[in-house]
Length: 226
Length: 356
Image (cartoon, rainbow over all chains, first blue to last red):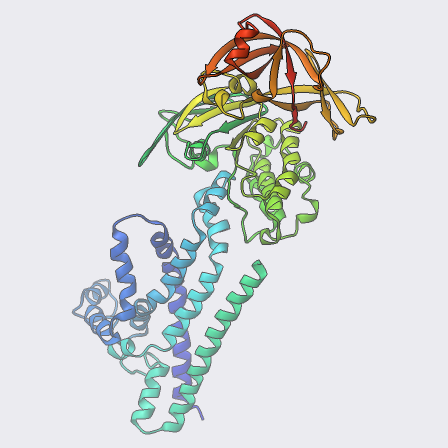
């Protein structure tokens, strides 16, 4: 059966995924909107940076984050200067790592959704008297809804399965940085296959259900529209 | 033509320059006519504020644009109906119609929601999604939405172009109602002569980004210095008043200043009817013929002539205050001694009814 440690790890994982996804949706909306509509030459650079976490080994990402967040890194020094603690081996550090790690999974679907809208509905809204902010809220956001569903679920599910980055910058502190994937690794290392099975099954189940809900929801939206 | 709307625009894009100067009447339909690539859509987009050209635009006393001012699209009271379907997919017909209505400045709401719904027969469509509408229904909704914005100028970009023949026929009466029942000036882009002849009061001729001519439709169509008068399908557009239907012969008389024109069939109604008379369907005689099968014979006076090719002659005629064209051979022209001021009779073989 699940022990107290396992529950703590499960709860921590879900909390991490939720917070990360919410912050990513806030960052991803302006970033995806900008990427979808800009003609600036800086777009290529930003595009590359946003895609980087997709192909970079998580350990590389984790290594750089460890250096940056640690007491001698730029962010760590900043934290110390304003009277805080270095973020390495803390939950806040995990959130920062997860945001970077899951960035493409949220930004890309939003960017695609915004580009698919095209210019026409927004131009039409303008000729009907809607200001830029009004157009964004009443036309762009509702039309990008399938993209938001995809982005939310992919961002959440991808953060759930995070391992390498967490291992590098979070370590394995129960209740603070020990997430589900690390618990599973621990159980396998200590040959507790039964508990590894249980946690792996839970992660597999949650991930599958989440993905199923995206595809079912997006299909439903398409059917309703037609 | 009173100049309530004055436009002077210059806009440069790679390989294309739009240079348009025109005054538009504050009522009725002004058609912007020209081949594709003439810059008609670019002109409408620039007027709506979707393209950034230089110059000045003033509409109904409001400055939309000049050297110092450029009102963004959402601050211009232009109702713009694009050529492509442009309804909001996430809203039903009612919500689409309300989008511009809610944002129109309340004291300027001259057109009421229910009036537009009735005018465009949208009562039964209000709860439907755009995807479930026919092409014609989508166009009507888009026109209604633009009208409810309460525009000082309605811009229609080829409203019939994307429709099949059946839906075209279905939409045409609605466009005529817009013109007759609303007091909103309409700028109507088209490349189809029939559509323009049927609907337009005034004409703006465009080609390769330039305005060739502007003026009342028949004046522009019969100008010798423009290519339209020399087209195979050149002709005049004449407004008439229909008389009593002759059931025995299935004919309807159309009264004009100079006499009567007969058309076959019975008219749908209305106090006016517009006909098109092609230059090639008009022949000229010195005296009024009696032994002829041609019904429509009216007295005319020659205004001017223009040689066409090696053997042809185009003749501009005054038919009781209305100008029409006739195409004859040079040989007949000299035999009849056609010259300005000469009185003749025009025999009109075909009169094409264009609707009320």
